[in-house]
Length: 77
Image (cartoon, rainbow, N blue to C red):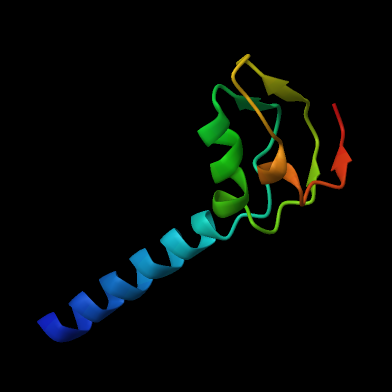
């Protein structure tokens, strides 16, 4: 196999590995938020997340809104 093909195969493998991690529907288990930015970033990190099998745990008294969790429809915990 030529170097070009090795590089191309490596690139494709890395791309699919990263894509599968990035496109996860929801994290498993409890969702633990320690700040407002954790909640705000949730919808960016998991835009397709509608259901969690765990609990929602908020460990901050400074959280002002839950807009980042707007796509959640079902909370299992």
